[in-house]
Image 1: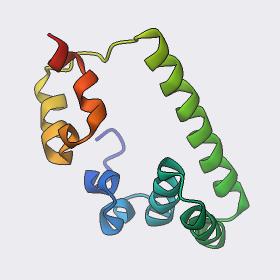
Image 2 (image 1 turned 180 degrees about the horizontal axis):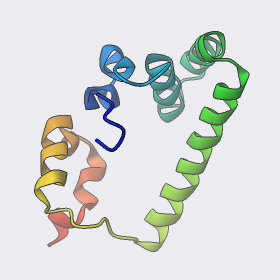
Image 3 (image 1 turned 90 degrees about the vertical axis):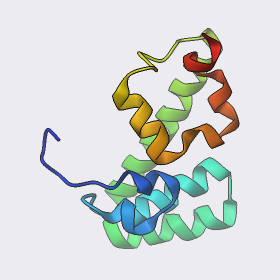
Length: 115
């Protein structure tokens, strides 16, 4: 909203068209991130090559750095029990519904389920 850029949150769920909406190289970035998260070596090699060809070395390196930092931060937060902010807000609930986030096993750890 701040940059008045249209995005489609379904890109988070693996929708290539959604990932490409408003995000330069969005489909390639999504494929790269999905392969990393799924620890799919073949998919990672394929998506890494596609991202490099579409966006160049700098974007590939930046994407790998962001993914590595995210993994580190999530592990630290999980290990020390950092809670999510206001999991009961209308905004959070609308995103959870739109993306069907409760389908993930980790959803059982949200504050909404604990309280």
